[in-house]
Amino acid sequence: MNSYTRVGISEFKVRQAPKQLITIGLGSCVGIAVYDTINKIGGLSHVLLPDSTGFTGIDKPEKFANLAIPLMVEAIKEKNKYSSLVAKIAGGASMFYQSEENEFGGIGKKNVEASLKVLEDLGIPVIGKNTGGIVGRTMMVDLENFQVTIRTVDKKIIIL
Image (cartoon, rainbow, N blue to C red; front, side):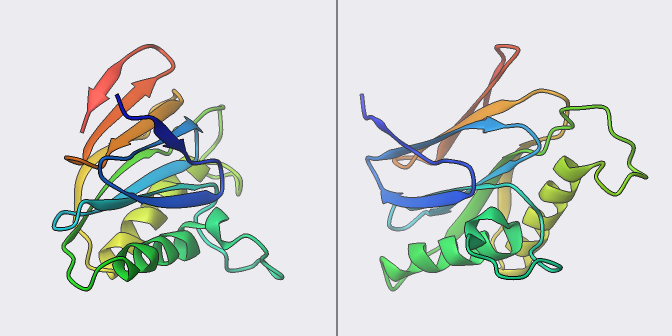
């Protein structure tokens, strides 16, 4: 069995099959897996916040969906001239009671919306999604076939 390369909060990693990627602790954060179906190269990003606008002196662009996803896609495309990219996302839960009216409420939903918008703007179709709800997730990506396995804290296993 292949070992997993772990992706931490506010980072992304790009690897090639037969490698596998994993990120744990997706609460309101979102995991975005992007995969080159031709070359079996993929990346996994664990974003914390939807958008970097309003922040100054950003020292960790991987924290934000609007910056991390394009950087990861660029890193995937650097590996090969020809690529055909698809994506799967998970996370964006509402981990605590929050009012959607509250400026801090709904961060999980905002993370999902921002991630989907960035992928759409990049022309990358989302072919699998497991988002929302109230439970945290672990996201595992097999770069051999782009099977994404989601394990929730309440012990459910979802295959995307």
